[in-house]
Length: 323
Image (cartoon, rainbow, N blue to C red):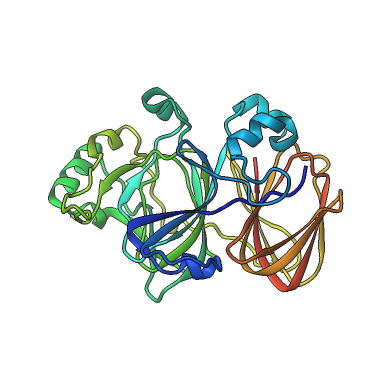
């Protein structure tokens, strides 16, 4: 097997902006692109291989064809033919709705789906851009319903000013929202289940207010999820991987590189995804497969990959994630 790139799946949204297409160096004209799904096995939005002999196959077809060789033995035993991660870029020209995601147990019971634990890496941020993550003070389910009803729910949420390089882990149950001017890379479980709590009374293109899931969200919300700052603190170090999130669903590290690095994956029983958020580089694996990667691109290394050497073109910033 060889390193895989996929065709981006562009999603136009009410709140989408104009940053994704130039960031990804795409030659298309499309307004209000809010998301680019980079690696996806979500039904109806399956990624398609863009390079090499398997070009044209979908990600689920690849998992069925290569099994453990692609995803790793433990992942195949745990998830079968379902690829476990969804990778996105998100460009919020306007505020996204305030929302929450169910955990595995609730999502399985209600939707026969994975839950949705996720993380954000801030790629870019306009002046004054913010993210909402968790509560600023503890509230009860009763107060939640009252505040949603009277429009004051946002007053009890923790709002953070952001800058590029900020990392937020957003476990299932944490109320959150992406604010206008934020451009993030998102790594999450393969799930498209979102409970929308508040949507700023917006109307869609047909003049209808979007559906809210206030009642369903009650069972999903962690009401005691209170901190001063939900940002993940980490050391900004060059030329070595810095782990920023390690959870049962994925492990993610930041690579800020000006020098060549070799990564030994011989003991790792998982695929590895690299998301390029700045600069460009070349990846060369132990089979001498070579692939170029630039800002806005994502590559999936099969679990069969033993080693990869990353060669920056001057400088590159990457996110590395695996299960």
